[in-house]
Image 1 (tube, one colour):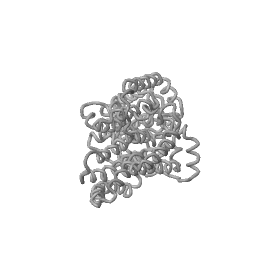
Image 2 (cartoon, helix red, strand yellow):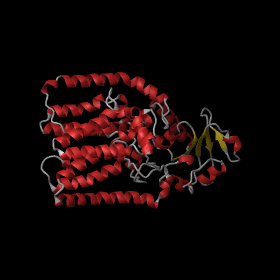
Image 3 (cartoon, one colour):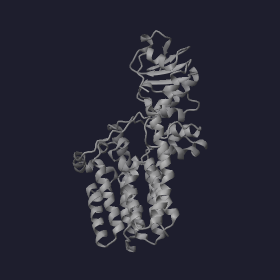
Image 4 (tube, rainbow, N blue to C red):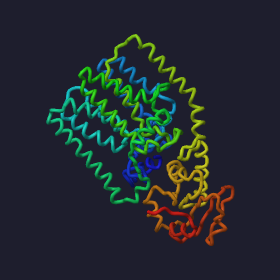
Length: 459
């Protein structure tokens, strides 16, 4: 995501999705561009952007409720982020493309405010599809919003016409997005394989405390808050003949249960860095939507609810240090490091490249393989091009290096005495374990790497 922001800020747009996969546009990277132009670093800006995108939907709902004079309900909605576990705060500060779709999807709520107009119909059709392409997790909030709006305008022919007209340009964007990967299939390195099964549903229901603990209000069972509560609410709505709300809530329940039939539910770890809950960050917003449909009156609780919110916030602040220490030690699949340690090593690498006039950095084996390859270019000034041949997400870089000839190459390959194994001029760099300098090279990069028996992914 940092590299995406750096590339965008320099006018380089290589793929429509996250590098190496046919989904997840780097929305946060795009928003970071103006800040990079101001001289800030992506790794500093991105967590703030992600956190703001997470909180804005709650603030939007609160503002809309406040405008309608539903002050108690507004206060309850804004309280939800406070009562979510500390892990939720960590996950929603990681710039990984998980929250952008939720923010954009929440903008569909503006179709529900005030008088119904063709512009609002157009907006709903357009923004719903855009939100889904940015993040499929937005489906949890889009389904109830769309069903509510559609049922209240069910017999209006103009509604469906304008809705379709609004969807057309969004569908064109979707078509262009996926046509890129159809024409460039090798850019889709990280493919999703979904297995849909009722066995997954049974297993997910049994494992709900583990799978959804990071998106469930503290001290509450997820089955109660995300299944029984919506179920009871839907029955109450239907009993009160509030059919749009009742059907919208049932629609959410069906989508939620269907999502649990997918094998992707179990693709994660207990760590916040690769949490099971990352695909379900929209559930707290659904809870906020549900609360917003009740006109709760209770001015007496005004002084007490903020006190409860502050108490939860203080408790989470107390848990911050121990939580992050625990998660750094747990298995998270992705590579995790303290930012101070990485920045120090990255700066040393950057200085070394300047000193040796390095034209290309090749990372084969190192604990910072992704960090050096994708983050260092966005942090260090005039950092040379990078390549991680075994699992390079940027297919265009492999294509470039098939013909590029770099005279001076820094090769990072720990655990191998490559200087003695090779017949070409490779010298180990003192005080940098696993760092080797290749000078006076006249061979295209990929051909050189093959001669050194360094694996290169197929492209």
